[in-house]
Length: 259
Image (cartoon, rainbow, N blue to C red; front, side):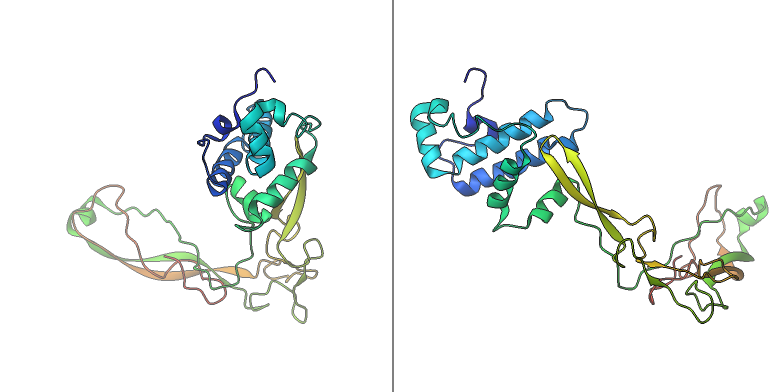
């Protein structure tokens, strides 16, 4: 067993650490060393396996006792046949570790930096618009009131914003079954991980339009100029920004307009 690090050292815990402390330490180490989070580190897979091995031993009372008494020789058979590609062994560890704290999906989501993508069903604020407008030097000194035309994206009057030809309606995307996301399998040193990605066919909307509106070509929107009043204060300098609330793009599902 030459060259192997002490299991307590691997997880950075004391020899009298509780199972809860070990579980917490392993979760931290697993997230830090996961191969998919460290694609440029050739040692990541070994570090991940090392942490998994330490956890498996130290959370099993019998194996931990044998390890404390005899060292690696007391538990040498536990991981003697585990290879980097033997994913089922590592998955067994994960299922045991997190069955009470949170689901496996939550754990792997935390490894990849966030929870699974979900379609938003509530009101969403519209996008903000940014426009550049030049005024004279005198206007910047004394201030000025201006009326400008801003191209605003509005619902297509022909299809009422559905994007579908009159008499038809959007359909649930067959690729993602209307969920807006699909599961993608990725092979790693420990086997196959499944992650959720935005559906390419419907681009996350969960819907497809078989017969797009000929007026808006399926976007559900049209561009119309809207006149907006600007009250530029006196003494402004180059690069000054003026925000006009509620005059940006329209919101979705009843959400407010952007600025």
